[in-house]
View 1 (cartoon, rainbow, N blue to C red):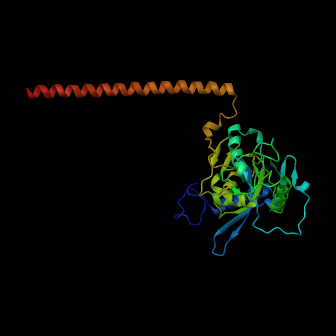
View 2 (view 1 turned 90 degrees about the vertical axis):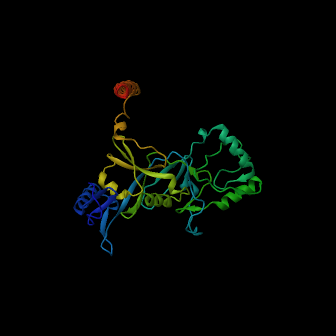
Length: 337
């Protein structure tokens, strides 16, 4: 429902074009919380602030959909406690890295597939790598000559000039620089990675948080170095339609509007340049390739016919106008004589 905010001050803002009444919000909250009746920690609650404004708060499911690597921070904002101990085998596996979120189950984060790096990019990167040591990347190529290089992230790590050290000293230095991330150890080999597409996480948000603030909250939770400007939130529907949330959108209320079931719609964190998919295009996504080719051929033929129809129409109108102008010139000449 679309309304003007200043005309209906008691209504609840969703974005610059959409507002709902408190009765509608109560109904949405009731439906949502009944759906998660056996999971109280997932309930969305609401109340009023001291100045009488309505506040909605709860856990928001966000799914990973980024295609570019993300960079973990080396240092946590919180100092690492010397009394905290943890076995490295509990933190890292051969397939990647796992760790706990504040309210999450244990999520698996896939390691970047290094075999997809173009050879030209690898050679250029090796030239820089001989002179510089990037503390967030793997050890020097001298230690592991056969291992390919990792991708650089959109917001690249700072390059620091360092002396070349013997392998043993280098290993000690790497262990010294290993820091804590949300209570777990930072690891050079898994500091740059692409989360598995469709893997789920949760963040606690409220109705005062717009799209960019929710993205910041998610990046802060996982101590991700990339800028929030590198990402966008998209609503992906079961039909295949994909709609980008605007800066003015409130993701938590958008989740309420779409209902509690993730089968209908999900919120994905995606790269900032990820394209939207309209409902018209989405209806063709699941069709077989040969059928899509046939549809495309028909559309091309229809386009050509439409172009020809318009060209013919305007040629006729042009001929009529030219004939009228010619007749007027003849009449004017006869009058002058």
